[in-house]
Image (cartoon, rainbow, N blue to C red; front, side):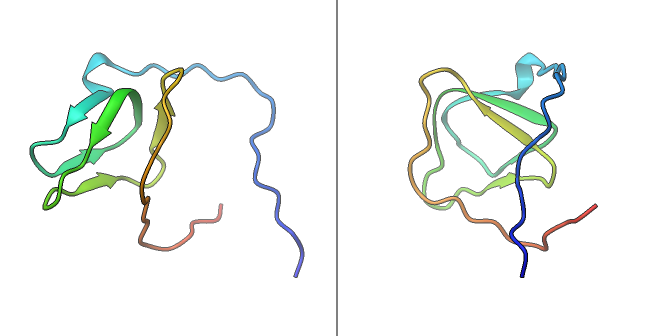
Length: 80
């Protein structure tokens, strides 16, 4: 089995993220992220609430942000 490289070629790309796609705080209801999302502050997903991140969504963490906890994915790996 050959090793697979997982990097993006160094080609600058512009990405517009509308204000509605900036995330912070505790989610009150099930939420779906798509397109691109910027995590500006801590995002809390409480028990009983589901955060779905659609395939192909770009999640950007603002400077100084980190992720803590479990990220789980379901579905199939897509190869183009």
